[in-house]
Length: 310
Image (cartoon, rainbow, N blue to C red; front, top):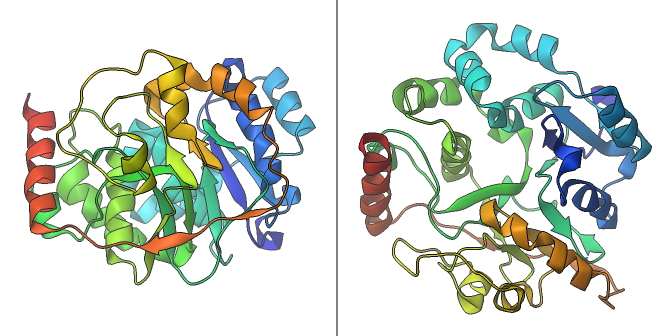
């Protein structure tokens, strides 16, 4: 099965995800990706899923991957990666996908809270890795990681297109051993790894912020800051409480990651999306990305330190 894939789209799926308001509408929306065949859509479970879930997933024409035996065998020489994969299922997005599809040109990895509103053409040439922009640098690990490793600022892993050759297992083993294997919490450690992989890749790009938006439901970024792919260390605190305010952040976009509390705005957003008149395909553009500046290194290292010690 994996040998036949040319451009797989893979989503990580946990038990009972279909009970969420957003999961099935988001998964159905991926059929609007015009340059990936639905025959190459895969679900990668990180927890056991029920017979009912399997039937629903199969009815959507997604293939269900069983990666454990193959991945366990491959990772026998990488004990730190084995351990962190067991502690945090999100690591399967990095490890399992590259192990199962090592020879393809690109792998598209998408979360079940990413909705595609328009018919889109995803980029697939001229880069090693493409990704979304978080509102803040959301990473975990030892504080000195920001100083010793090449990283990119505020990567969001909701939608990533990557050449599997970028996923260097020897490098990841060292990364986990040096910075990530003793985190207080492992949530976001996977984003730290992506940020480091992107930092050392030859050609890294961001999706255009006007077209691809991370909408967390927080007040940290305004409409213009999202469009410009901005990120912050300081800013407004608190939640967006009304849909009218949240709706402004969606304006003009084609792809949306309803991250964290943003999921509570999904139902109202989805109702609005149904009235969209966009019919012509939207080509999703990218822009070049730099690694951390001195300012970034200082503030990210401080964030990492406080998250681990307080």
